[in-house]
Amino acid sequence: MEIVLIGAGRMGQGLAGRLIEEGHNLTVVDRDAGKLEHISNYLDVMTLQGNGADYETLTEAGAGDADLLLAVTSDDAVNMLCCLTARKLGVKNTVARVRTMEYYRQLVFFKEELGLSLVFNPERDAAAEISRVLRIPSAAKVESFAKGRAEMVEFIITEDMPICGLKLMKMRDRYGSGILVSAVEHEGSVLIPRGSYTLSAGDSVHLVGAPAKMSAFFKAIGTYKRSVRDVMILGGGRISLYLGRELLDVGIRVKIIEEDPQHCEVIKEILPKAEVLLGDGTDPQLLEEEGVRTTDAFVALTGSDQNNIITSMFAARSGAGKVITKINQDVFRTMVGSHRLESFVTPTNIAADNIVQYVRAMQNSLDASGIESLHEIADGKAEVLEFMIRKDAPYLDKPIRSLNIRPDTLLAAIIRGNECIIPGGDDCVKLHDSVIAVTTRFGMQRFADIFEE
Image 1 (cartoon, rainbow, N blue to C red):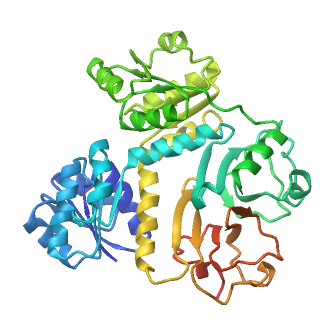
Image 2: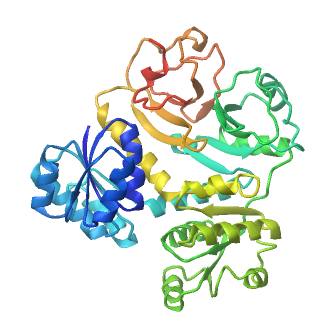
Image 3: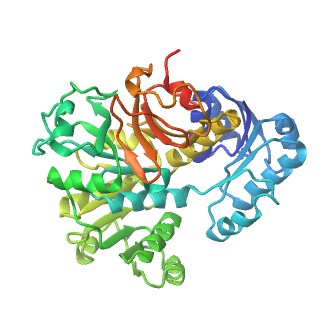
């Protein structure tokens, strides 16, 4: 596909990398020549210096003939104007990054009038991901599928867990049939494991099942943590505001530490039920005075990756129940390692998943089993995809054991009505099912891609 990307900042760079990996042709537009030079040094893209909202600039970038325009500058109004202008030029689809709460709410109603195909809000999506992890504090990461009827949970095996040293073929007998280990990160490699695989300490396991089955499993292996009742948030930015509102709405106590006095007043107006403290959240004494040792969860959401990591490590060492760390650059996660911190949130990666999902759906808009949702897992080494089966096909109503599924792919779950089925060899995929597949093969666009030709 021919794609025009407006904005070469951190978000633009992350999206460009993923879209190039997907095989698309990309033209990147930005006012800043330095950013364009940086992105062109490591990615095979065309670049154009100029104002992405300007008619002549968009014409020169080829927006009129493009399949998609993505506007991801730091200015919401500019992003919307870029999309509106590109629509007038004839671009087929437009996607805008909109971060401001007021704009985002209004665009739900004005998408069509502004010519927007999709609006995404990385901060709101990051807050939603953090909220899911806080709901299952035993997990490092939680992805939701089929409107919450199925989940993929990531957690790390430790030596004291009863499943350490257990072969996967024995999991069903010991812990029931409602869960499935769908992927394992072992010593830097990602596996789609078979029944003979033995779990070992340090493995990062990706588990699929219904929410109730997940809770029962964590209780059975002795790692279940009680529900979060109070959360300490470091930093009062947009993610904190979205997260604070979501947590307060379900009765969780929220304490936000912010060092800017004027912004503290803004937070108090937006979240009157939250406790807002003025102070430097990187000060260990302040954190201890405010109860970091006894809080159910600590979430570091400042604009500095280094501050987030350092304060998270202090909170984890102090005894905070659950620690979640926002980072903007994945390299920091690699440097820290999972032995100290396990729950990281990267807004750019979340946004990239949503955009890639949308682009693949565009490519197969007429297909009857297209992608409903997509998530990268295992540090980008595997994907989990949700497909909706909308039309009759040769692979329906046949036992899974008789289907020629690719060896690098696992059919992890079937959602039928309100039931989440962990499929065995005799189960079948039926019309109107949602199906979750995990794969180390990138680029799948439709359910038929999971089968070998």
